[in-house]
Length: 271
Image (cartoon, rainbow, N blue to C red):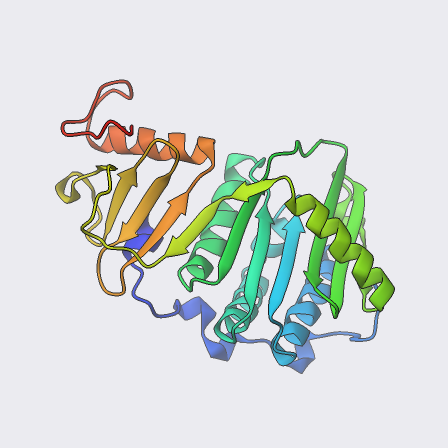
């Protein structure tokens, strides 16, 4: 909520162009195999740099391994964020299947890392309806027709994992076919769109005085929740995952000092 409340349409400082990694950050650009956490970090920097330089139209992303490789090193996180932002600003559409089956700490770290990117409006976010499982981890970062980082291994061994960097057309075709198959069992997680900040459309809207935020409103419907940034440029962020919707509803009830099962005055029937 704080990230949304402070949204101005400008990029956060941590995502400025000056943070985009240079060639010295990309090691062994012709490698096909990377090892462990540091290998994955190097492979991702190479992948995003090539996507930026190649004006990638779309990147397809999925990973259900722990997010420490991205979030635990602050210097690396800045490089990742700068490259991701540069790609999006360059016109790249990011389609990601988020893994929401994470513990609280991982979820918070992932949300902090990804939310600023959502404000740029080019993220197609989804979640899978299939169970993740606890035996193996999988990662697929795909630039269709150009490059793919792919890995699978026993959960808990990521630090020594083997990450393949594919560039051959046959391998890339298989990787894309697998990703498209995974997409068949997904639903939107967050949708962003320009909205009318006044029109309620049958939503229960949390009044501004009830919140500690000045620039956002929380609109709660039956099937989804929408955070509306009411200042210019106005933009709506719609959440559809049942657990996220429940969390926002409970948060709204907490702010209004009412029990979760007690109705809010003027609440719409859509609740």
